[in-house]
Length: 116
Length: 115
Image (cartoon, rainbow over all chains, first blue to last red):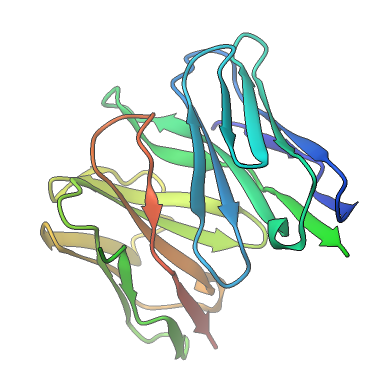
């Protein structure tokens, strides 16, 4: 069973402030690390897929970094806006007995609330 | 371009009844995944298919759960008989290609309540 841990579990941030949170994953047999954004009553939406140690990806005010050797990824949000309020999930591919790794194991998420 | 389509969006049923959830993946996607979201366990993989063939069903909780993919554009997840602990949001997702680095696109989910 893979352990994908996210911290903190929830976070309240003032509008305009920047914030970041962490995803920890097994550092052995690394394939990729996925970040998803999940708004209430909607479906999870892919943000980033990261595959290389040292990777840094950016989408608007959101960016992510990856350290595969130590098994963690950070997600950063610069200048938080109310529309950033969501649960941010990271996910790690599951290796099945046949050797492939396609399905995802998700962390419990960081629930982010931006306060005006 | 339509995304992943799931039906019904909401289902309320009584314990012991059969429940069938449906999914239409994005056209051209070879991989289809079924996930379940609960407060206790978060979002967990139940089963996935490649070109309509089940690849890994180790996440299916019990024999009461079964999934099929009769063709490239349709999959079902069936629970028979249903129990209150099956209450959850069930998501279907699809991806274009094989691989751990491939983005999965999620449907809107089916919110199931078993009384």
